[in-house]
Image 1 (cartoon, rainbow over the protein chains, first blue to last red):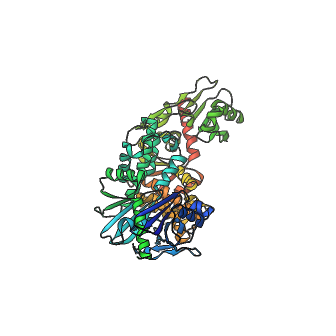
Image 2: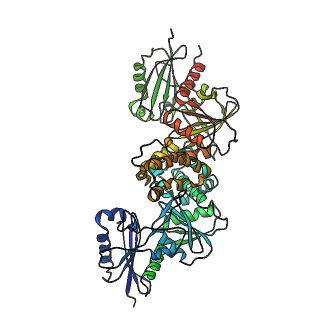
Image 3: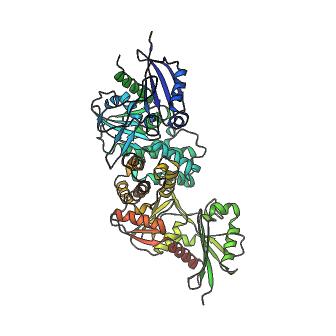
Length: 305
Length: 305
């Protein structure tokens, strides 16, 4: 029978996920809540963690590996950044211990790209990336991790050579809630991915990124002049922002660079549909599986059997 | 001595401006308020107008020419659209009378571009355009009318051949108020145009429009990694959106197309600085002067001396 060996925690801005992992690597128990960094910074990180550890009945002597915003400056203990270019495995050795705890708790660092022209930071997705590709990946890869802030990481033979953040998800929310386009999407019933306007908008924005803020406005003018539906307007906005993102992310990549999509659920479907619309091949890796694999790789490196 | 001949009104979404014009074309009196369409739709268009007419002591028998959102579907009386391509002078003949009024009140139509690929509408700026160029302009011109929704109109020998709306101003507001970048710009003291980051961002977004939503994010990552100031972050956001707009607006224009900028105040300075950063020559026409000239051209056509 497998015995509990360590705890893996993905601690984001607005979500908390914890897994109890056995000596054979299997998930023995798990616990989730919306006690992300924002909440935990008020109620206490140690208290939130302790409650979830009790929920999964974690033995007192097993260690905890954490990734995500718990390591930000506004988080629990600042875990800093590993600067790119760097090997994927470097994050394994940069874990920072949380002082004054009864058990061994370590928080993984993020990645920083410090050049003045395109400064950028990642925190949490580096662990997903490690889990998705493994430390020994070969060749060139463009890894897409969509979300509130979509991250695109360019990897060459296990080295992270650079990455870019695109504000796609957050802009979609701000535009559909806080601009005149909120009227255009009111009552939208379909998921953007199910609407034919989505694919068309992805293609248009990919080919004509300079027209992005005009294409967004056509969600309104299309309603005024052609009776475009609310669902189509929503698909237009979503497709425009995603097409713009993919256009930017692949601008400097060779045409045949393999694309890996690390996503789950709704976002996975949206981006798979977008890549299809652009005739781009992408391999999908489940985001939950990836982050757990990355945390497990870190735990195995820090606490070898 | 000049006597009052007509009233000119620019009735926008959120602002109302009225001028009393004399027989020699001079402004005899004026009145302004924030009783735009949004307000007037609740309090009554006739009441708002009557109050301003009383303020400027308008004689009971002189007519009123109106442009802007008062002619929208949600406005006072729907004034429809003139479809492009069209001569600039066509809007002069499309004015719609407001029924049941004691004096002659006419509202000018907007412009509509009905093709399915790039539907677009203008309401109010068509009158500015007429005033800025006159009905008999020659050659090709790209006319930029910046604002909440920036309008770019392509004119050839007095014909409006097409136009595009860019959501620049509204996106700047939504992004700086309703995304994570609100923290990056908190406390910004300088006007974007005065910050060197503005010109640099205009140039970058103009050359690399596909990176727009990544360039926006660097307002945050630049602060995290390089201590970028709030004023520079604000300039980065403003410059990125304006550079993106100009890139899209001029994508299909010949390199030597003359640019006319119709703007006043803060926006005039921002766009003049942006054009300079891109080594583009633009002739500035004051927006207030232009709209009054357009309304006067309409009044003189409808009620000739």
